[in-house]
Length: 140
Length: 137
Image (cartoon, rainbow over all chains, first blue to last red; front, top):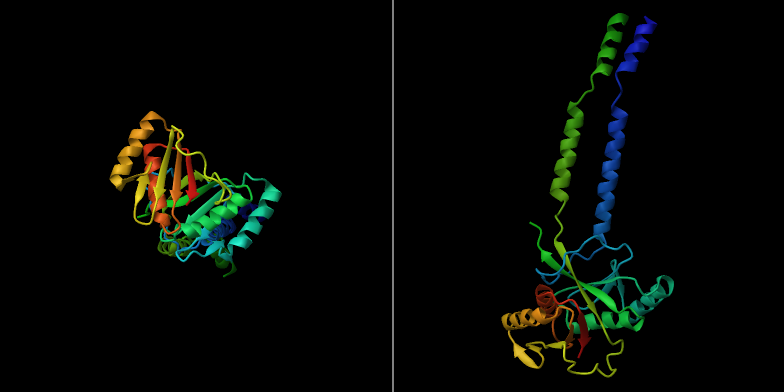
């Protein structure tokens, strides 16, 4: 009798713990993906550029500077004045060199005056190259 | 009685109860389908900015293979001549046939909207021009 019992437990594997762990992992990854997206200001309405080159894999060091329709500058939901932005970029360039990619997400209704402040802050610390984000294709 | 109990417990172990798991999986699926919003496809337009100081003397005017586009609040000019969007597009495509690496200098007035700049950059991207510089007037 004890022998048979032993045999039977060896044959059927208990799946429940594995399923538990897999679910935990799935939920973890979905939640962290969502966090990454929440860093961007959703109220910014980008201009459209149907012919521009589509975004490939984003360089992780990219600094995303956002400008809303009233010209307020922010990085990751923290607001900056142009002077503060310049200080921040200067520190970044000192630490990481001037090859840090700059991505400007400006609202289509922002005036060039506001965008210019950001571009001037970038060029004053030696960041010459920058990218503008635009919508290539609306989802759905 | 003891015998029967053992029988039941062994039965439970041998076959996995699937129904609650499927219920939970469906709930999770529905939750994510409802909450996820699809992302727009983003285009990235590369530009460079030649002069750090807006008051510095502008780069030498009229180098032969250089296009100058000026963006004002209500008009767009190419090499000092005013064009509509469609006209500008035709001109840029014609220019791009000569060379796609020629420098395109885009000057923006402070009161022009950012949307116009993106439109012009888009037309340049459509024509295949890659060497774009943005200046402020």
